[in-house]
Structure formats: structure tokens, C-alpha cells
Length: 140
Image (cartoon, rainbow, N blue to C red; front, side, top):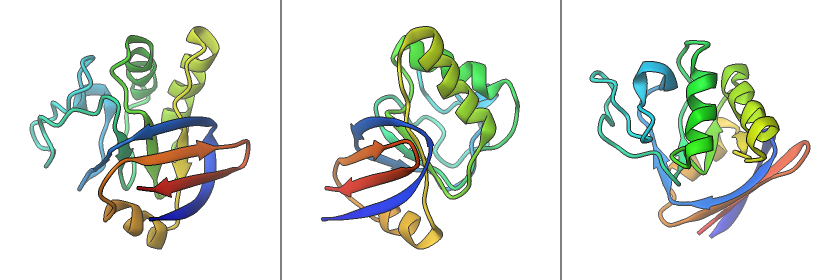
């Protein structure tokens, strides 16, 4: 149990089981519209992102990732939330587009590396509450 405080990149509320990735991920070409990791070189290939609090060190490229993420949000196959160690404008854009077009929110939070490590070690569902500037993650 415990609580972590981070910086909000995109506001929203979510609850889900963490899925901790060992490597950065590109949503474009790295995931499919069903929310599965399909990048053949990714260590978690085959894992499903849908409804999970995706804990990843950072995103990996393509500006097209924003449109893939927005479509996953629209179709209900996106992660419940994204938690990173550094902000990513491309992912934020995908979350913003989904909020504007579909009125659906995907919170994005940045944690310090020590808090990121605490979250990565967590077992059980976590609650993400990302306000306008500050985010809180309650560990299960």
C-alpha cells in the first residue's frame, strides 16, 4: 500500500493492473488496434494493453502513434492509463484527440525514477488520479 505523486501530462482517472514494460514502445507498428503488442522485437510481444495501467520507461517514436492511441481509446482497447519517466508529446496528443473527439480520457503521468521503480514493483490494481497539474497513484 502507499501513494505516489507525479506530474500530470494529461488529466483523467483510471484503475487497473499495472503492465510494466521492459523496453520503450511505439504504438504505431508496435501495437495493433486490439491493444496487443505486436512488435516482434519487443520483450513483451503478445501482451495485451487493454485496461491495464501501462508502466513504460518511455515511448518510442513515430508521430503516427498519436492516431493509433486515439483509435485504441475510441474502440476501448487502450490502456487505462500511461505512466512514464519522461513526458511524451505524441502520446499526449493522442489522449487529447480522444478527449476532444470522443469525450474519453486516458490519464498520462510522469513519475520520478524512484517512484517509477516503486510502481513497477507493485502487485495488484492501482488507482490513477491525474488532476490539472499533480497526479496521485494509489498502490493496491
